[in-house]
Length: 326
Image (cartoon, rainbow, N blue to C red):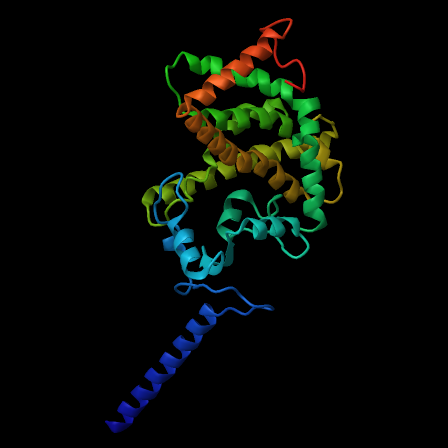
């Protein structure tokens, strides 16, 4: 009996030592330099549940606010299974972006790659990222907008708002999302794919990035994953057809096909991620702008006065945007 008892004590002690050692390694990950203060939370899940706690739309995340008070403007944590350093100081954030692909390499947690794809523009770094970024800016920079897109954007926006005006009220975020997808899709792949891709792109949103404990979150994730699968099927069909025919179109796909730096998978992931990554951020910012304007009638009056002056200076008030200055 004493032998079994001694063995039990030894096994228990060994288990405690192994768990303690594992927990210590989890709480103190290896680093070439010195890590900032903070907590890594529980093994595997880290502090993910705290990160996703509900909060107000215009409120700083309680997760960030509480840890900033405890640890300062720079702290370490683990979110979504990824060791993370959170920076809240504007100067540090600016320097981080300035040193991108030098001292810092951008990355995303693996769960995002399920939606965006492993070879997308957001996951690339080094020369590949710079090159993809330059190609994208040729389409979306101020010069690209001036020469290629601003007229179409003006026309599509006015048509969309005109169709919504009779409804009495509408969802601004949803309307802006539709505008972005409607405009970027033909510039990415050609207008013939637009009808097949709009709903798929809409489904690929970040509604799932709210609470991992809610059933609706996982439904949203499944919907986004299914939307990506459907969108990639259309993109692949257009890609194969374009590759076989050798036809050149004035769109993002043809521009990337001329480039030898990207493999086929990377090109298709880039095509997919542009409207998907852009629509949520832009639609949220526009929705907030509308919200703030409606609460500040003096700002709304000033905007109306400015636009009225622009129209009065035109030869034809009903014409679209007539100059880049406007």
